[in-house]
Image (tube, rainbow, N blue to C red):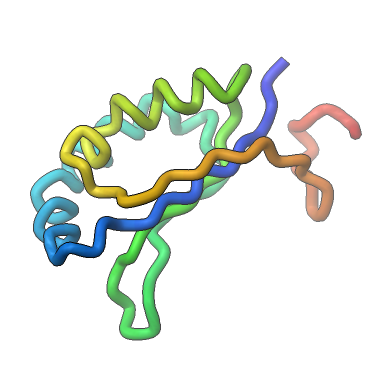
Amino acid sequence: MLKQFIVYRTDRTDGKAEEIRKATRPLHAEYMKQFHDRVHFGGPMQNKDGVSIGGMMVIDAHDEAEVWEMINNDPFEKAELSSKIEVYQFRWQTKRPATLPPL
């Protein structure tokens, strides 16, 4: 049975993140298409000026190892965009999609 996981990542802070993101965004977008039916929502996190500083998503996976495999093969991460990545299993309760099994 699939479980939900939150992936929370913050960009590196050495001034290279914007350049890396710009260069790899098309590859990242193409890569993520294969997970379209498993990603509930996701996107960039932005600072008060609207500049991307990381990303977050909720994704279905069998286990945390499967999530890390997806992350490690992402062009963003192959290009070392993130300074920190956290993965947490998520128990969707509020506004739970009808497509998920009951709690």
